[in-house]
Image 1 (cartoon, rainbow, N blue to C red):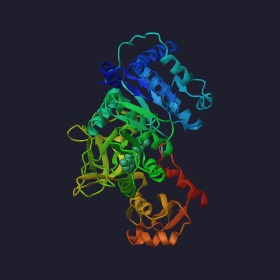
Image 2 (cartoon, rainbow, N blue to C red; image 1 turned 135 degrees about the vertical axis):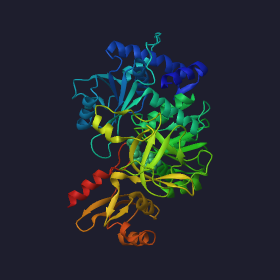
Image 3 (cartoon, helix red, strand yellow; image 1 turned 45 degrees about the vertical axis):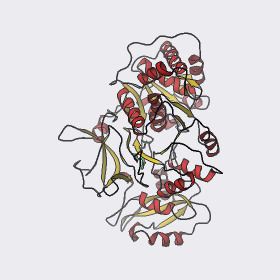
Image 4 (tube, protein in one colour; image 1 turned 30 degrees about the vertical axis):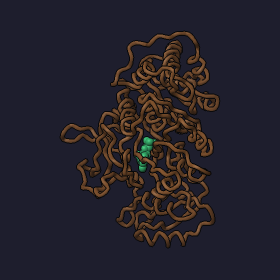
Length: 491
Ligand code: AMP
């Protein structure tokens, strides 16, 4: 199966039903064929790379589907990327055509090697009334479909190649796990250039036959108004969106059947506050560009705060020793390995990075080494993510998991968000330092005292720095390398 098969099946069954905002399945289907024909005229061929560098809009969706129909490989590009990042992505993937919007176009102008097609032109192509035929041959499950460059919270981004089979597996997994059906309407304001919006939001919708209402950017008041519509049944968001929804809620909360959070850790106090105020538990799930989504809290409950539940259908996970890949006992921390049909075949143009990212066990099972540290909590029968391997702080030989300290900080009154990093220290190797967004004045001593009641002394940040806004990427994830730069610049 491919995403296109899902679209074609939904169109055959319920062509007049809305698929994407007010666009019906019939229109999405016909538009994808027309855009494929125009892209072909533009010179796009099977296997060519076509970048989409645009905010969420219909032109994004049509360019994506049209290119896939041709067997071209779509490279979604983060709209925040500028010269250095664009140059890296466009040249690494050897992109021949870039679909860009009015706002992003000026940034691509510096790269004459790539031909620019306006997202508005794609929209005009899609809405023509001319019939278009299905390109042949249709791409198969093993053909490359997209190259998604990892969001790069550290270092230079790598392009994870996802085949049509990978995308279909990811969509099927979430549709099954979350009982997603044609009766559902999803609302999300997640960028389509990231796996959360594209693989879960858009592709999941096509696999379910339901409707996806999307916005280009998240605004809590707008989101609440849309979520109050009778037809909306599900919301997908990142943790910061849940914080904003809690702050903005006035009156009765919207009644949805499912609220999903992912892409970063959901603080347990946000989970609890949401349950109190919205009367429902958020379903937290864990994923990454390279495999879509691996773990999620049980649909039927119990949903455990601070945990990411169990493997999604079809996904295998193992908490392993980094060096050997051997499973560690329950309760111990190890690297999370992920296996199954949704896992990338590797990074584009990067055989070494690909080799380093995988581990094959004695039974021939191919595991992706996520770089995330996890543990299996046998009592609650759930997995917990304890942080990124690279962000682990080792102080005087003791391990400090930043997430644990951040969760404690976030639970203190007046702290809106926090990020803990390791600062170099000649005696202890590293010492934890916290950056906090406060509602009022920062009282570092009071915070340290409060933390001291709950955490071992070596985990207490040596310094607590007030910051107005933590640096975040387009998905709202804190960019810790920028905090490290801030510390280094201070000396
Ligand atoms: P990306 O490839 O941009 O989607 O980033 C993937 C990374 O986000 C993972 O490797 C994790 O470090 C982090 N992540 C995603 N979901 C969660 C979650 N529920 N809890 C903690 N970290 C998460």
